[in-house]
Structure formats: C-alpha cells, structure tokens
Length: 329
Image (cartoon, rainbow, N blue to C red; front, side, top):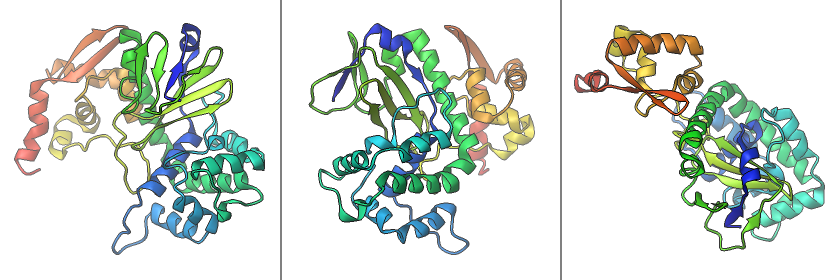
C-alpha cells in the first residue's frame, strides 16, 4: 500500500483532526521503541513509575518484546477518528469492542505473522485497551492541554500552506516518504504494493507528538495518515510529548515581559496570531496586542500570505535573543 489514489471529492472532504487515543498510541510506541534511562536519585518520574507497573505484566512484556506498534501498529488500535473532536473514552470504547478473532489477527500481523503465547489471551482488545488507558491516565492526560495546543498549531500552519500552495506543500513533510505525487496520487510509504483507490472514502490527517508516523484504516471507508507534528520529533521523559516552546532568556523577559518575550522566541519561523495563540494558550486578542507592541518597537515584521498575516523576527530581535548567550546568560 505504497500509494493511495485520492480524487478531488476525497480531497475536498479530507481534514486534519486531533485524536487523544492516537496521541496515546504514539506515546506508547515511543515508550516501547525508545526506552529512557532511569534517573539517578530522587523520586521516579511518571514514565519510570509507569514502566515499573507495566513490567510486571506478562502481556505488556510480550507486547514490548514483539515490538508491537514499533514496526507495525495493529489496525484495531488506531482506527481513523469518526469526529473532528473525539473524546478519549469514546475512542477507547471502540478499541474494547473489537472482536477477539479480529484483534488476534491484527496482533499476529504486527508480530510478523505469529502471535506470541503471552498475547494470545481471551480478550486481547480489552487488555490492549487497559494498557492504553494507563498510558493516557498517567502520561498523556495530565499533559493534554499543552500537547493539544502544539498539535493545533501544526494544523493551523498546514491549513495555511494548503490554501496558498496546495496539497503538495501541505503534506510535504508528513514523513520521509510521504509526498503528493500529483494526478490524485498520494505516496504514503515506500512499500512496493499495488495502489489503493480511496474513491468514496473519508481521509483524515492526524498529528501526533514524537518522531514517527504511520497510516491507519477502517476498511473500506475510512483512512488516516498519522504524522509527527512540526517541531515535535524530539522525545523526552514523558514519552512522545510535543516539544515545549524555546526557553525565554531571563534578561529578555525582564525587558519585554514574559509573554512578549515568549512570542518573540516562537517567531523563528513566520507564524500567524492563531498559531501563536495555540502554542502559548494566550487569548487571540492578547497575542494581537503584544504583536502590535513588538511591531512598533521594530522587533517583528509582518506580511500577508493568502488569507493570513504572518509575523517574524527582525535582525534586531535576533540580536536580542543571542545577547544573553554571548554574555553567559
């Protein structure tokens, strides 16, 4: 399934959607595929505490040993969202409702064709849902407001690129082998398989934190491209967490105020007020007021790009941001 054939009608219906469940699966993939070293001294982190609880479960140990979700994610775990703002509980209920034969078949595929004995349990979908629920409750849910702001900023940026440059620009960096080939052809990976025709189907794009993406489907009518959101390819102790904004130099925060200094650090790439509001959690009007002050001070410039106005730093602002580093902070 190296290419999907998508006609104009499919593209017109397609959209970018956030999914708490898929973000949780991305976090689990990172926990399994990129184990973090234990801290020395002090209380264990939330990730370390969760690892310790899960390590005692034979089902989870077998899951990790088989690399489930690293090489191939079972279909029943990440069915494309049915709504634009799905709730985690509703998405998890869909996972739990997967019939046992279907879940076993998906797990066997993820394990290379043979299901390990420890994963061949009476209710594999229920056990998998329990695992995801633990990751959600302990790692993702406490951080979801911040994560969702970063993911929403990516969606806003891609919508802008789509409106100005078309699909080729919107999907250009979804993955190392994902690209718009033109003539209704979307390459999703490097697999040498016959192209799949998505005529009449729904297609969604789902950003996640963490370094890797994948594709998902609920045959025959729903498909999803799951991709690392811009600026989130770094992973940390919390698993596949979207990256925090760049640190704000303290002298600059004292000079400009914390909010204006934060906005300035985020304007390496040009961004709109909506993107900045999503990244910072500030109200849209407040962001606009701060940008006007920065604009009047000659620290940012603005230009219209399609329907959006994008702001970026000036060389004077770059010098201000560099100065604390040269002075030793």
